[in-house]
Length: 285
Image (cartoon, rainbow, N blue to C red; front, side, top):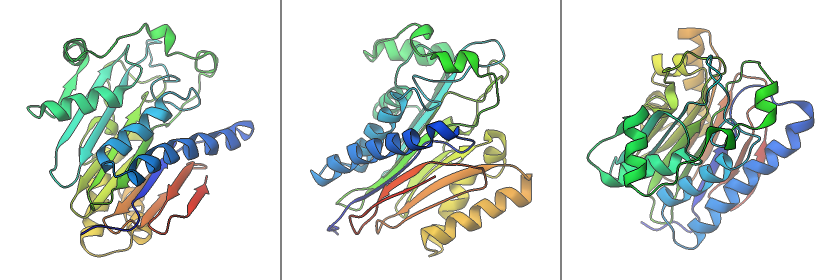
């Protein structure tokens, strides 16, 4: 079945956005969504579109992913990312990595290899070298405001999309939780927690990773999509599960195979941008 319009939705992380950065955070999400949208209109795959959108967010120092990643308790960068294609259930993820400008690109290389799903630490970096992904110094990824702002951040970026063939995909990338223990891995690298996609749609989550892991939030949202709930209802039901079970904070974006989108969060902010199946652009924070 071919859809007249593909659809895409991106998020820039659940948490608090400084007042003077609200507009810029929305603009960054819009730029990422439009980059993926244009590819979808040209007949590109949902998988390529979510990768392109998340790379755009990783390249923006405003977000806690790629350039702009936060620092752990040792004052070091440690990043996670994952990507999943819904029609084949192909997935790739990396965790506890550094020195990579676009962690989602490395996650895509893992997916394309198809033998493994998750690579971590030095093993992931060794694979990056063999896959031809350029490594960089951590200093190139640490922007000044991250050095100066020693406050907790829950930022993660993500995207979900459906293409003209009805195939769905999702991708999620994070610079981690501020001041976390070295070696800590959150939900963004874990399929079914921070990222999930199948025949029915795609999900990307953001927030307190440990709570998202405990509730398998992305897969929980997918269960509601499979049960026939509209994405906007599914996200509210899913967020309620997290709050009841963990009394924690999170946000998520969802897209179904019809190109309908949904998003919800219980944090102060979560910048989002979407182009749904009617071709209309939406923004929220």
